[in-house]
Length: 126
View 1 (cartoon, one colour):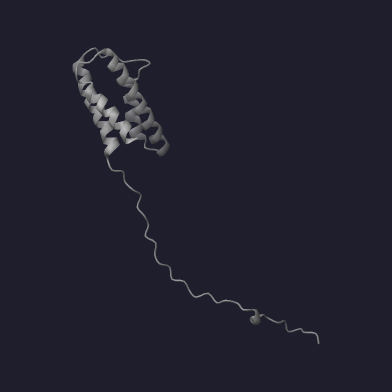
View 2: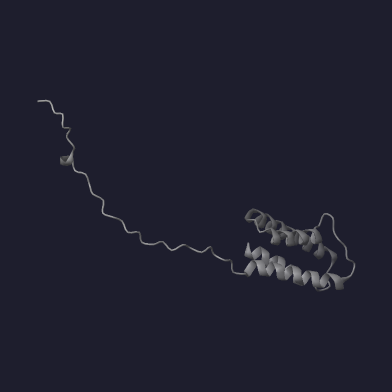
């Protein structure tokens, strides 16, 4: 997953340059797939603020109903911010859940019952 997110980030950074329109269609597709993947993971893990951020990225970069801002000067900061978000998610070290140290429990010795230690009832028929 890190590789895919890094590819999304590199594609966003490459979008700063003047490229043919087909590249920007590809960019919309790849960034949308990356955003969908992250939204799915974070909704599943209940990290709603991150999911909302990438819902906005998905809306901005969706290939089905594209948003045209018509000026490259507007898209450049958006591409940089989106690329940085993907890099942050890809390479930021994740917090490991704190492991509870297991205390060495002191066990009392268990007394074994032997066959000769049977309880014999007091009422014994002779």
